[in-house]
Length: 210
Ligand code: 3PG
Image 1: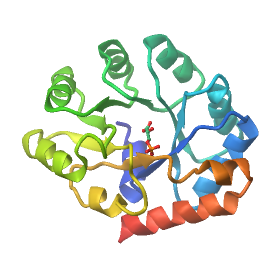
Image 2: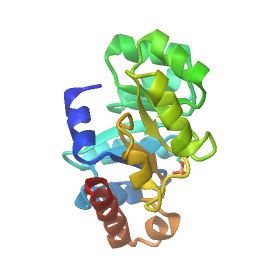
Image 3: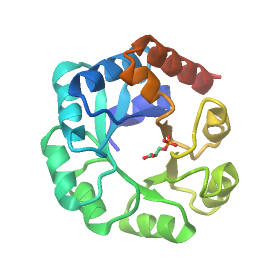
């Protein structure tokens, strides 16, 4: 992981997901999150225009670290990196994506949910992985169990994280950051209620500090 990404996540270990179709909404959402103190953002590639939204955020905002999430293939990884993504997140572990990112020195967080997957990531030289879908994969007790055997690994749980359980995950030393969509609810993004997004981001920062 780059030093800058690492220090941002140490300061505010929360990665909000943006999944907007409209690039303008994506930009306003990113700005609202940054105003609340979250400057590492994952734009999920789950619609035809998601990459355009990511490109718009990169072009029109300053000071953010913008990554691409839900990256499923090596071609897609190369494409989002060409568009300026600074890190890659995948729901699962695909060797060719992980190997490419390792070779290019691009931070990658591949999804894992079993000891076998974490061990495969470890054997490939990865030390940071996503733990997904966190709540269904065993939540905090499972992360404690994985952390006790994979002592060099750090995890980014996502899937079912919210303000209600954020502190439980962040209390674990081997949790690098928590990710999630609870910070960008559709009602707020589609309704243009960016103040609500800033409030959710500020709350998450306060929970992380507490
Ligand atoms: C992800 O891609 O990390 C998950 O879809 C996030 O899950 P959430 O919507 O429950 O936060």
